[in-house]
Figure 1 (cartoon, rainbow, N blue to C red):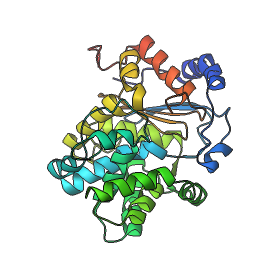
Figure 2: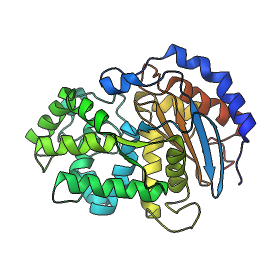
Figure 3: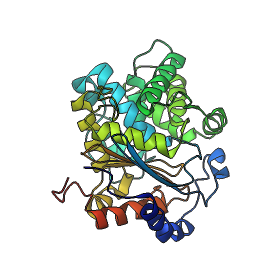
Figure 4: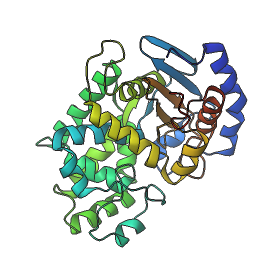
Length: 313
């Protein structure tokens, strides 16, 4: 399959849903994120050597929770399925991404899935490296390889801002540590997680990540395996069941696109034919997902039959 949409049509779709951004609000619990331009809007569709883009595609933003997709892939490559899922579950939570309530109910007290904050903290703890800086550097190199962009870096300002406002994630770490779910020290795990979330990309980078995942882990241009096929398949399955937090079920019904959101306004989409979609629009809906971005993917899916449940792809 070639690209399903051309630039002019993509821009028209974005214009049609731009007003949805006005119904959302830019994340404020991390002060650095509050500086984002609420009117910024970008979308890139990547397939093989083809790419269509529209909007503010040069704007850079931090991965935030879209980093959980790549950290899970790397942890699975490091530790294997059995070890990873002995410490984090596979079930949708039905709770907000930062909830501590679900942990208190689970016996043993392991997070329900890797896409919520508690689960992503465990995944960060699983990444191989003898020191937090080494873990983060390795993760960054991995992202640079997948995006084919050596300029991908860590936004120090966002990381510092998040570090100064991480009481809830720190509490999750201490809870997990007290139940012997974390191996490393709380501050080391927290700093690793914050730095992963603070990796800075643009929407083209995001679309290329989606393309690699959708192509069974292969580089869309060279065909080289960057991620094992079974790992890419598992990661995209989690994107369907858990990638949009407590709106994952409704998004699966309305759009049917494996997708992961981030509170920066990022949306990472991946289709099983190797098409990747990267969207950026900072205002968030009540679930913490990009308000305009979510609506854009729903409309594209409806008009171009992109749902993985439609049988077309």
